[in-house]
Image 1 (cartoon, rainbow, N blue to C red):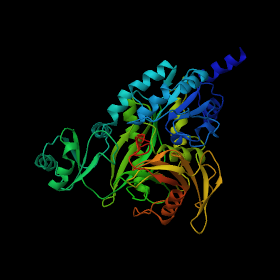
Image 2: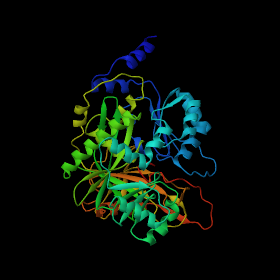
Image 3: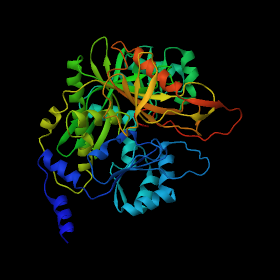
Length: 490
């Protein structure tokens, strides 16, 4: 009886300080589960939240992580999306048994659809994210632009419409005085694969099949620095994580031209732009909340390097590829992970804080970077050996050694150390575009003029050198979707 009374008190008392929020999550009795192909996006959050666990498809820690469940695998599976992976997990008897054992609770996912919602409901789980239908609506690049306009936020000079021929595209661009060097996007999908650069009819002909039937966002091509940040829209306003610059298109890391492959988060420089990006995210979050969306979202932005003007890029309404660095900074330096505030919006608790004071806690931090390592070679191989997850150290000769089998990156001490999260391991296939693993380190992996640093190249080469694989010819391989191909997919 006393235990039940304490639980009731925890869920009904209004939380009015960070101490209250810390205590609430420390004493939390509601199971919270992050279900995803890997634990990466919310890795380390369990340090702060009692009853927080992970269910994953890949066993990145060889069964040693005390809060991760990975079901046994039987045979190959063809997955076309992250939703397919998550729905497979929710149908798996071991996952269902674990969720039933834990009891009714909250489920967190990167990607999900209406089928996921039904499976979660069957298992007594509430998805602690806005509904799939609303997320899909907001995910459209067309909707993003309109939401930005409603919030008084500028996008890069653009026009929206349809075009069946190159002539119609040019006519559309001419109507908005965009010129002939164009960036064209379709509403949905990985920005690395659904963004097209067109400045001639030959370019149009190359991509026409992808563009003719779609509603298009046509933009003037500008010299820009791409970036992202994660924010949380709450009933009391919008909290904004640190500004991150995108690392994109480097052939050492990804086979996709323009494809996202990591981020830098750093202090110093771009002070005017940082302020503009912060205000933009707060306005956008407040507008999203009015539209019925609450919780975490990722906002991409562009800094025009000629004019230094900041433009809205797109919205990824979900836990994202920006989440790991956001949680690292807000928890390590600010002492309150931003995802605590996300969860407060979905749990039965009344709370109210001065969010401006919380926001100030995240103003100062060290430099950090992450790289998503894809297999850039166009061949299929069976992996016979893969580097373990944990903290690796690099010597002066560029060789690396595993110094600690850590379960997250919080013990990375300097730029000669990096945390590696393994995705594929021995017995798995690696193929063109496969996500091999993720690397997190202090310092920057990209220069101010957007070049991959020598240190980053050395780390990528060293990690890749830890793999051993046997080439295969004519073998049927399981299809696993790109797990980290874009912020929205990560």
